[in-house]
Length: 152
Image (tube, rainbow, N blue to C red; front, side, top):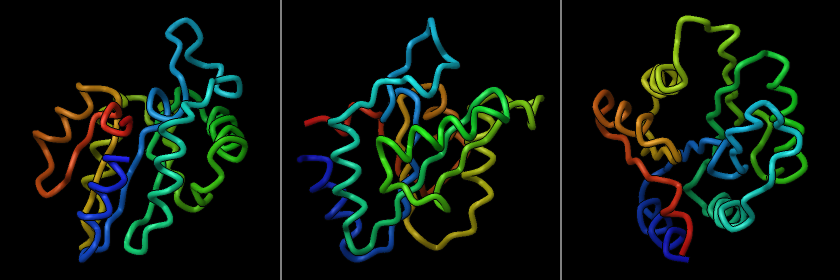
């Protein structure tokens, strides 16, 4: 549990918020069926690691995910209720491109993270290198991890 120990050490003396992308990090991403959220395969190893992290005293765990249509927000919440209910309902940020038609997924995630006025340590986990690079180039004082870091 390398990642667990890493976060435990990072959060030992500092309140920490961890934002986790959903598709490709805790739910499989099939390019042939990008809209079929209800039937996505759960990535059990990553889910177990995150479940353990949410039990740490100084850690708050959030979902930060993007979908194409407003109706898919409820599908993602259903999936989270079924496979990762430890993500509290009030800590699920699911942004629809339908409501934000002029922004890409990486811009939506970047804008959300930039809007945070938290004094807490921020960590973001995603499977998309373009998203991670965009955030790295635009936000200081955020710790970024590729989803592969979750797997020992």
